[in-house]
Length: 301
Image 1: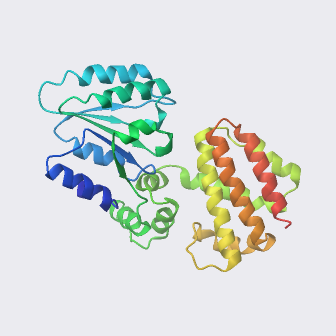
Image 2: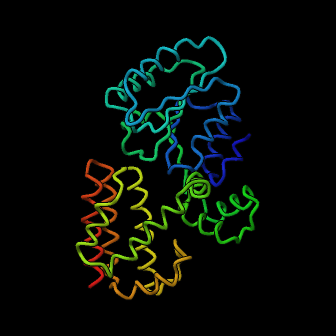
Image 3: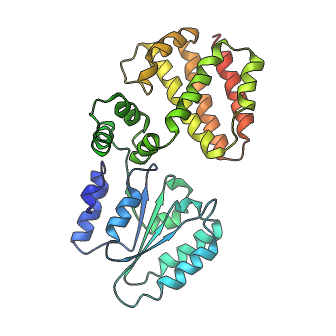
């Protein structure tokens, strides 16, 4: 594999290819961008021929892992060693401070690659000691072509077009939609949203009470909800932008009639606030209950 196989990342590929061609790879890189846009793939290509070590931790990367990294990376006698620290923003404060010391005393032949979806959660002093490389959202047309080739489908196949749109610039997310149950999950979420305007307030609260409280899943569900209300706002305003849910065009037209444009904008703002709350420590069902009630109330605006 070559870096040219990292799809949709011309800036990142150019930076890395030039550095490698000149024999001037930095001792530490920070790749930032959404999940599934090629960050880890690029690291594995660059590490070809070298021993690749992977550090990761959920919910946190702990100081013991960084101490192990520091000890093992100091043993390199010849050749090179590559360390991939996945989701580096998960480092505890103690781990981050310990890793900062590693960066301040780099060993020859040792390269560190940090990946993150949230660069602002990484210690600024770590960021300043890395070469920062952005990984952008992959164009929808490129994801569509990739899916068509991978699964031997026509590029204008309805499923290909739908998943390329829903992927929101991430090939990794597109593959999850294609190979996993996410399409079925999307249907469940959207059918709930469709029912909210005509349901009673107690029924709407019941929707939230029956929702699974798996935090990662709820965050993904909220993104689906944001796409739905963005589509409603587009239909309401007569915008010609492409819909996230083109297979629901008729239902979107129908439901947009019960909302004002202002109400739709307020609901989208509320969904964004709830995403931040869920990413923190808010209880999912409480958040969803409040959100569904605002969706119900907005239908009367």
